[in-house]
Length: 294
Image (cartoon, rainbow, N blue to C red; front, top):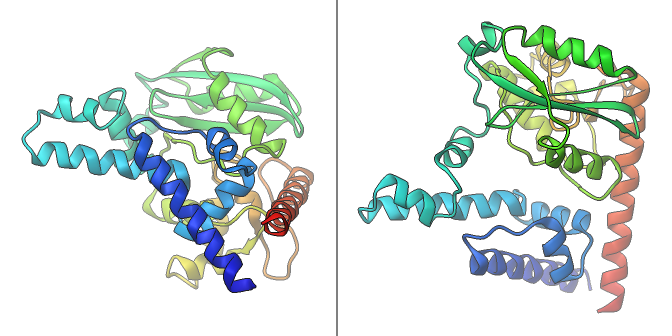
């Protein structure tokens, strides 16, 4: 029976991959995939990542990148190859080619000189949520109780950038994060524009690989990046994370199981872990309900 269930999941993931290949270069949202395959977006994302190690969005991005390479190998001009592969512009290609960590240290070190940053602040289940973006992706998210304090923190960090409030323009990013907080969006697989050291990048990528509803200790992350003695450095990288929720440092706990610290407040960390545990239970219930109906 368990073997049959595993085969069914494998077959379903194969069908999803076939569908993404069929509609390429058009992308499909989790909502569209969920409706097509009769699964909640949360369950579909989790099922797909468990089977393939990546999200449907990343799978589709891989298809686009391979198509672009093939077009170039066949002699197409770069601009033509970009459009043929399904990218809306050259910036969309470069956004993914550097694994979405793109802000140069010099730009960041100059207080964002020459950059334009758009931001929005909205109410969310955890208080106030700030989301700030550049043309490449999200550069900062924050949680707090006071919109003015969140805005001041953003402007202090990017003191020489042009910082503009644009609730409508940043609405897409805000909606994705709110959907995650409300349990409709399982993972926040969003492009980022961050300044990070090589060590921070390693740590943050390991945090993004932690499944929803699970936790890891600082020492486990240190071991995962091949530096088992670097637990304190891992803790420092978590504390310097500039994008709350998108890089889920709230999934890190101490070795003894206690919560440890959290840049945006320990009560928010506790609430996030409880929410994600509920998401995981709901996904398991969806899977059991589906298996029972087949």
